[in-house]
Length: 402
Image (tube, rainbow, N blue to C red):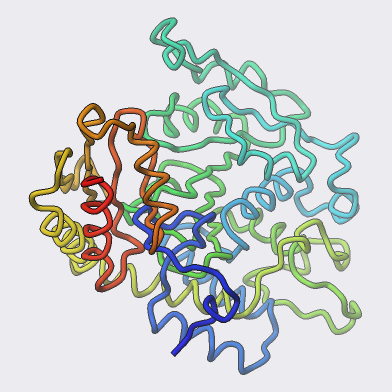
């Protein structure tokens, strides 16, 4: 039996890189796919569906409110729009034109990356603080909390924080400095699961809005994400995201999501309409989140990943011109992995050439390339299906024998 990719003439791959967007994200559990099929067979009021999903997200994150977004990046754009326009309908209509509005969002230089395109898309102007001496080998310092405070003024809409391990200052340090000034803090935690405890961590540390990817470790649809945070800000998100093509007399959103008494009228379609979320994505995300949290609590989640890595290691026993290291310490490695360090001299080619050969072969095999400069290929187990670890090991042995 052929699959949709074969019918389209597209090769399927063995994905040892993990749930990267360019490799189409995670593998959906059958229960998640079934939930999406079920959702596709009925029509509901989207505002009511978002309110129900948001209530569950609030429960599992400890936030006041939650929302399903079209990936973490759209969550960042919506978060920025909420902080800039709030409940001001006229301001919402103007975005991304922020002339005369609070539009400055403060960020440490060391937290900048190209994903902050999403924040700028809402019309925000990023105000950089700090000098990342430690990342350039010129010293040991980075941005400091007082530098955020020094940039706060009447145009400040928010502070933006990327919570990658090692980033400085830490979120609690930023919160301690900024919170007394009443400035909301947006956190990009797109790839910070696992550990699943991070779902609650950043809200508990004082973040006002937190964005997670739904299509990575949660195992939800690739075009899904989680936005959790303050009720008033999530309300602004919903006002700028939902379809508003109805008469004001018939507009009746759930009060838990949008309080009509807190605004002067009915919103128009806002900037968030460019990142629509379907009922299928909402159903799939909520289902995947529930199942993943259940498996995490029982220990089944990590145990399954560890078994996959053990199978890869077993298949690579006796591999030529390489050494194997299994990384399965939960404290250091939230996701267990296998590191294959190549003897480039014996192979007479470098790790990059080996990586390309594996990606261009049949079947194509993709690895985490972040350590290729150290002659190491890393296997992430999150997207490996039954039977694939053995095929992967065979491909590696074949390539390294040549």
